[in-house]
Length: 500
Image (tube, rainbow, N blue to C red; front, side, top):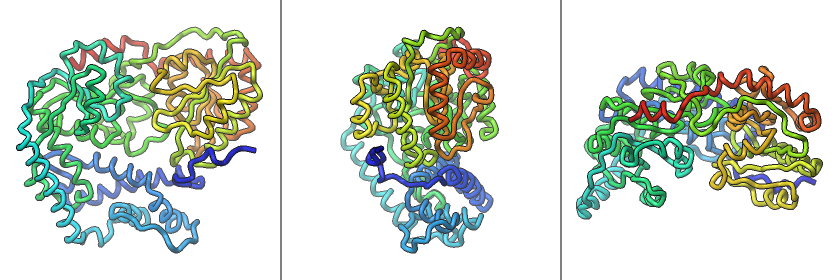
């Protein structure tokens, strides 16, 4: 019997409605902010910086992770929940729910409680005043931090991902920007990189005079203050960010634009759904793996210029020779619970893994932990009993090394599906979640197998493992289409030349 304790029941149970919820949240956020701008064109401006798209990302992160909002959405919009005692919503969650239901801004929002506005701004004022006084009292001397390039990251994992690019740059040509987290600064310094380790003075005057429409996002003002201070001091030629989905990434592009500093965003992965984080980017250039990326994102990023540079960490392979059956190895790439992959659906994927490693004892399996979702301890103990299983951890093994060692990559909607075709590995796409189908449609192009239930997944995996001709046909198709998604260029040199 499958152990149900392998699932984290503390997270939201979307009950198969996660995809529809995601679509409704994303569309409502855009229409919501536009409705506000229709009433006040400067509603999202702070120090002449357009903060709309950064705020939209903040709203999305809050809403997509809010159990309270989903339960209210389920009851009042989907009308599937009969409970009467629902959790309270934060002000921004109330606004978004009202907009989903009524397609306009609530009168309550337009007549925002002035007491709340005054209270929040007052708290922020005193916090900033205390921090500014500390900086004055400490009198920390700022050393000359001038560099040609600023590399902005928000997680330590990105240093490893960007290492091929960083290694190609002159050591004194770049400096890492990592926010105001001093612990984060120390982690970066331990890896022998220079980091921006000074803080700015926060502009209380501008905070107090900001639009009331932004009262729920006052912390973003400090980020803008920091960025303006940093960029004026360092005066870089360019700024490099990775992925581009974080609220701060958008603020970087807007602040840099106001100072005529170029910004470049390096592609990291393929989004299974073009959510708010992947919309309305306006970097100087988005550095894409191939034309497939620009086709996928252009509709949602009409003002973004794309530059095809290839993948800086994967080297594409052009042969399709099938490895002998004795050396077959399968990789299962785990995914964390989210709106597109609910508890029930992830349990099906776990069942497939357990079934496979029990049945195919002559096959070696790699089970790779998701970088943002630690492997469940109970599930880890369950699979560790088998001698044909290796658990791979992102901090220890690169995705490239894991992919190069396998013949078949099995995942739900991880970007590893796309990365696998760069290395001539056949993807088995298990669309067990609420996503209608995997995009881009590489299965339709014959470069992957896509299944929608457990029985079909078992059948297709068996065919791939036991029929060399069947497997070889997919590899042939991969070689035909991979150039659309992974341009074969000297990626590191191209990136180095444009940012230096």
